Length: 117
Image (cartoon, rainbow, N blue to C red; front, top):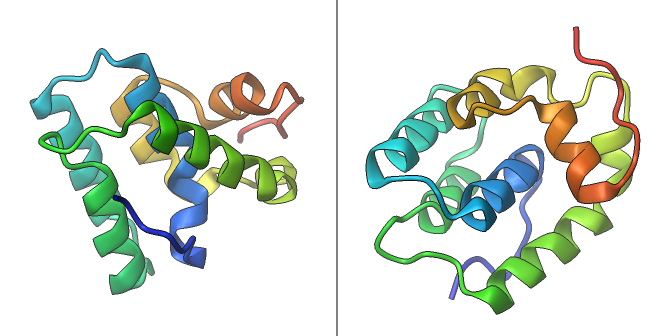
């Protein structure tokens, strides 16, 4: 079971975590690169980082029910993802997945995300 609580430091990364698992095409090495990119992000608090690490453990992939729960969390934070400048601080993490943050938000929310600088 993954984090029952959505900590503020986790929120920017939730869409990226969802697509990482939902695509089902990432190897353990690619997940490791994704995790490393998250660890390089400045200002992320230790509890959020620990929760994100658990969600990105290649030995414990998210189940269908956990993916559904994660998508619900993303929709509850919809306004955060649609705000101007959303995703600016997580570009390196999105790049590790080979996707743009705006592309991921549009895919998951069916909405137009703000343009990325």
